[in-house]
Length: 239
Picture (tube, rainbow, N blue to C red):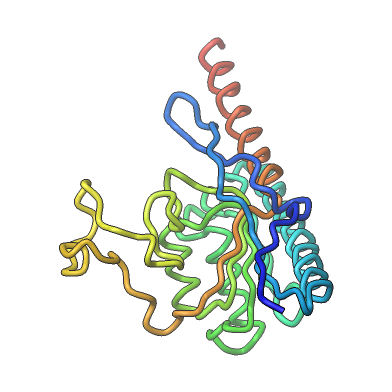
């Protein structure tokens, strides 16, 4: 039987609802993400769809753990980004931003998770690992994930100010979506020909990226944090 494209209603937590957009005047606004589509063969539709649903449930489960880390960070006065690293179906590393606590600009949740996972696994190549993070990784963290050969990156809310999955720059696949722009970003010969700006990563060309898992919850924790920050600033001025 011929292949068909099914467009079921995505499981809860995968439906792109809203995404964080931050500005100086109003740190939290929204943009939408592309809808999720699944391709399956009619001959094995039930099994395939069940597999997709099971995977979606796992993504939500581990993203909730990342959200718990983000909440810890918020209570510590950190920008509430949380991450967990999963290998073999279990969490081997977890972290939230610690930049303010440690005065270390590289102490992002993803960086800390990658370091922990490398120690736990006894090797820095993490091709069998899945990194869950509540916010689209920045270029530093995306680059670290690529260098560590992380097999899959799953994130919740987009990061239009500093995201490396198209929010600001495109370091994560699909790289063919990254093209030269009028702001001068990129100077390769490919961009001059109108082709892809970025080539696949030399040592991690097959990374999988899953976007928009528990997107609303991941967005809400950021909104709440920056709303509180603004209110604290107003209160300080009035004192």
